[in-house]
Length: 597
View 1 (cartoon, rainbow, N blue to C red):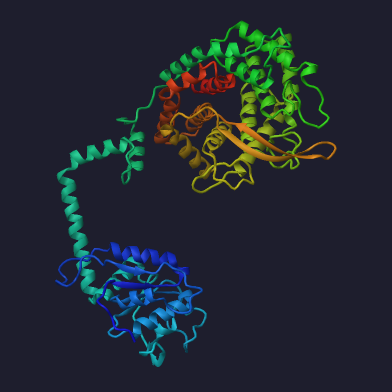
View 2 (view 1 turned 180 degrees about the vertical axis):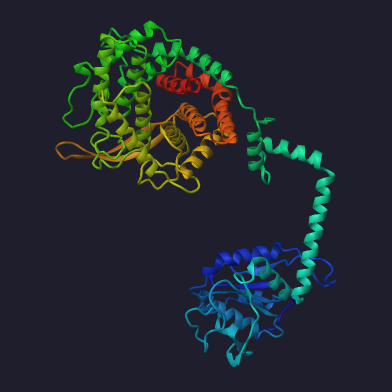
């Protein structure tokens, strides 16, 4: 038998480590509990400290000296009771050791699972939640006697957490439960009355200050709901919403500044041997130029010459390995035909009926045939390489980009290889694949591939959410709509980032001879332009389906931030002639959607 030193801990919590979550809750609840006043001079205001062992003991032969010392210096023992605890050797030994101490305090059970005291003997039956030492008295040598014990337990399910906690506090302090409960209720009433009086006294000033702080995006209780209410009422104090005409003016200024860079980035259309000839980059630049209202007839003529040149026989040589070879791209990625489709679509929008339009329609059909090689199976997903060993290992980025291109064709009244119904089927399949690959949770969104185990990518999620919003003919499923709004509304706080956000993919390719090769491919996602596209598409969705005013205002705020607040950094990037021209091209192409009526 050990003799007790002066008490250090108000309680020792004994538990099976399978009940660790309950132990953590109880430990915090006991130490945070404020004991009501008026219960006597010896009653403390806080139960500090409470001992909770956090160490696993699977290999120990007996309780450690530290555990026994903590038991000896504890005023009471609280046992978290469950079937796991009933079979835990260590919980039982802690109860035995505590009961065997001279002058041991009370043992207080807290039932979290199972049934108490249903075992006829020391060995617990299936649903028993009391360890043997809790059901039987303990001798000074820590052995069980033949005398049954009848402890009074708090039950987390029958009593509820609040009352169960009060029972344990009363037992720890040696107080009557009714007296403690009445004092606690009086304390809570006094606290509520005091708070109400203080709130009424300073309502006007505190209310205005609170609203102002919440509107400044300070982290306050209820501030997200308050900001949402302010947005719903159209009230803007510190989070301005940029007017659409200012967004359009800012985009026009950026396009005007970047247009010379774009024009200079195109090769001489009359020189087939010009250095730096890239179908991919040319198509991006053409898309950006023709998306600018200031583009003139010479720009269109240059674009048409370059697009014709892109389909010349020497630009599309056959590949013995089965890959797509286009221009100087020996294993062209899917962005090459997809950007070319976008460039052809924008050129066709500027052409009237006639031979030139018919010629470009024929080129569009050829680009679509090349693009189809990246969607080899009819499940809606698109791939990073023509010759993937696993054709079903689709890339989310490519599928979203392909859907964006197909929606552009639909908006122009075009089809897929001249067939509008075929285009509609491809759009529906891509939408379904993206819906099926949505990852719920926190954060929710989309990963690089279906089999990716990384957290959803924020920039990719913004892009996919926007294109799904644009494609939607009815409300999106609630989890997807919530993720879309959360991601896109959160862009109002995103700082300017470098242009390139590479998504790294690892895949295996196989050529016609069966030779397999490991390929690392980067999908280049520039977050700012695709955020602008996504926000413009989401605003259209919000208007079509009459989303709450708070959401519409929050989306507008994000768009104003992305376009106007970040305009100085964007301008520096799109006018930097030392940077790759595709940066300016993709950025200005995406921003053109923000200025669209």
